[in-house]
Image 1 (tube, one colour):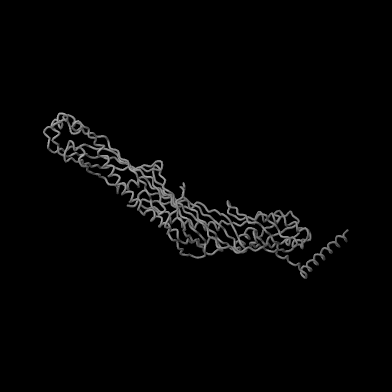
Image 2: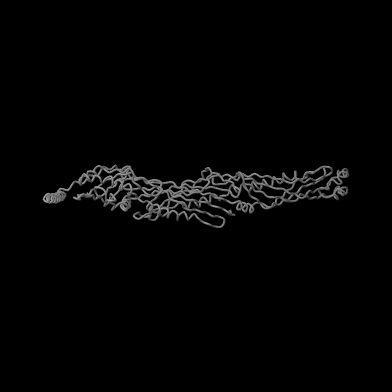
Length: 516
């Protein structure tokens, strides 16, 4: 028995030495790389970005602006409405408005105020009054007092001058709309009410309110028309839009979004402006202004040309403001390889050493191959048998790139190991084929590419740029902030992996004082 054991040991020793010599003198041919389906180079990519800003103009700001321009006094005259009783008669009236009140409801803004003033009737009592003097006595007491009626007999041919108090209200209604030419059409209408005041003269009733109201209506209408013209020609909306347009037309430094990438710039070029008609609410008038921009990531700073649009597109109302900036960052596969090697280099499988072989990934490279990624692994495989046969083999692995948006990582799915790789492993021994399922499992679990460094760098740079829109000055407050960055999609060619991202945020503005 001892001789048999010694013989087997000697045979094994010489067999092992023979294999080593054969591997040295006649090394196995490395497996040929699989044919790679090449994709055309990625074309430069331009994405769309949006900034939609709701602007709340408070009722207080509107009231204060109107207080500064609305006339406080109204006055007028009307010739002889009672020629049968008075000669050379004339009605004169003056009214003063009170403080303005501004309120909104059902898409209508109402500006209202109280009117207080004086009515004055002047003229000369006609001779015919004497014949009717008996009828006059006591009938004008409601206008000028009982003593006036008793004195009418002595007033024939004399000057008549009486006054009465006037009270009323005026309301101006506005249903504003925005015109394509960057102007606000106020659509104003007015309503005037005058409290009833009657003047008895010689048996007849002189309706003061009826006589005065047309005059007040005309005066109010003239002032409302002048106000409408002023609002209609006001360039404030266009001027504000031009300022924000100029701020958007720029290049924003992204600095280094991750190690291994050069400094990058996000070029923003606004191309379209849009807005919604004003919406009237109880405490404010809400305007919505929006800008669409073309954005692209480039290696250097530019000075884009962004002509301001002559017209604004009118769109439906929106409830919330938002910032949405699209960008596409091209990452060389050399950088992707570095990230992948950090995940899988040095990994051994199976992890518990229970398989017929032990294999370790010593290096990895990745590139695009058609609609899949091709990973080339250098794997050192060794049998766990007593003979410890082993070798270093190139393994070609194809996998579909799948974006995990929630975790911001790139995974490989549908992993397939190329047949040439199986042949290479077979050169070690038939048992080495058992390593391939373990390798596939290892890659499915560990071959992930963390994209967060790219996303974080871009997010921080854009957040700093958006902060430029945030300001607080007398009468105006603008709040803008970046809330998240979302990886929208990926695409690649043989040498570049393109990450398409969308940076999202919020923006809102409030106006508590309008420019004077």
